[in-house]
Length: 193
Image (cartoon, rainbow, N blue to C red; front, side, top):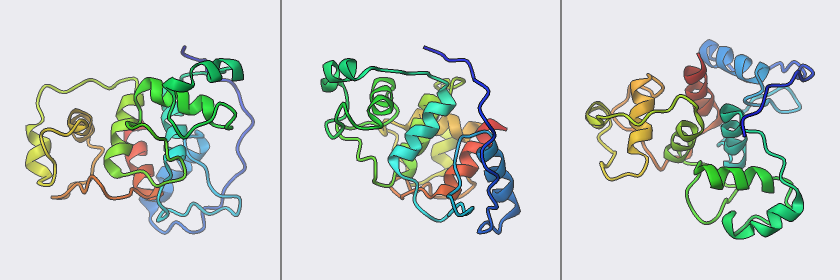
């Protein structure tokens, strides 16, 4: 179910005192203002801190504009369709159910407090993005990133992100590297701009 964006009170103005890069600062200010990402209560962003899987799901939900309000009884009935480590009474159970149903994160367990890998973040982001279209060709992506395998389940997602200019111009993608909040912010900002 697609939701209308409701008028919410403005988020508190974060000082973002710990961001030195002007490009990252511009991206984070935009993302915080639009409520895709949050600053910490002390006004910092902590760009080098790995982004957690649950925080990534929150970004994917905001990007997809899916509205959910699953009552507890529904979540109990659907438990077998959710991640095995999510209880129906967990505060984030509805978000996890939507994520599993939409295919944003693969696997049987959510592991919400664990850092998300770069490949899982980009794959989930593209799955949640309303404009995602599977590209016909992955050759440009595979020419640039020598550490990607053709058989990866996320290859078309990465290829779409590459074609949109969302990924850095490096020789290695490092798919299993834990993505930090700064890297995630830059990719998301490029997608939204």
